[in-house]
Amino acid sequence: MTGPPEAESVTLDLLKKKMAEFAKERNWEQFHSPRNLLLALVGEVGELSEIFQWKGEVPKGLPGWKEEEKVHLGEELSDVLLYLVQLSDICGIDLGKAALRKVELNAIKYPVSKQQSQNTNNNTLYNGNDGTESG
Ligand SMILES: Nc1ccn([C@H]2C[C@H](O)[C@@H](COP(=O)(O)OP(=O)(O)OP(=O)(O)O)O2)c(=O)n1
Image 1 (cartoon, rainbow, N blue to C red):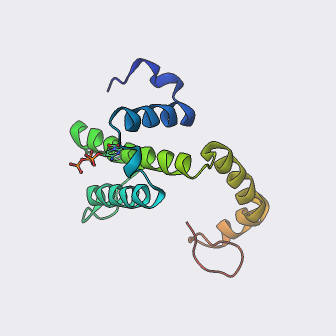
Image 2: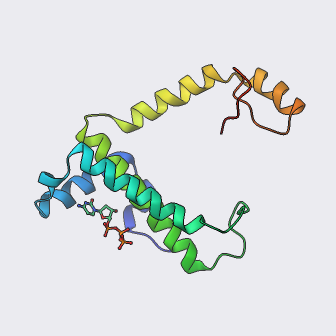
Image 3: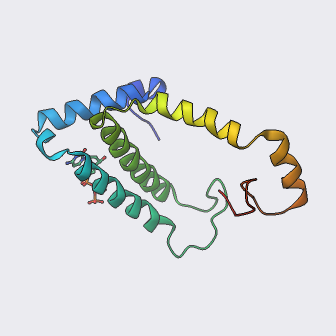
């Protein structure tokens, strides 16, 4: 699969700028309210889910999937990302910064040592707080 020339240096900021340009050129900024972008995002999550629907558990790396199926998956994942980037932008949220902060918060909430002892005691992933399942 070949991508655009800038694919190696793709950043959230580049995607944000490209999508802002895309909307501006088409005079679609008027439609890109937070609510509309959120609904569009959820719609694309639905399309992404359809790819996995009724397939049963799918092994990592998607062995046996045709190239065209993987291309389709890439398109749907991208649609979700591109709407998420636009939604964050329109809400004035720096998505990269917010995500990095969340990674740090996650690490504090789920300390490595505690999780490792729980993983050896159970086949199921627990969130370490009240015994409920977590993903
Ligand atoms: N008002 C719009 C319409 C589209 N897009 C962009 C974001 C998505 O990457 C893609 C979504 O386009 P479609 O609504 O045509 O959805 P699909 O590409 O999934 O096509 P289809 O629903 O026919 O499978 O285009 C956008 O930013 N703003």
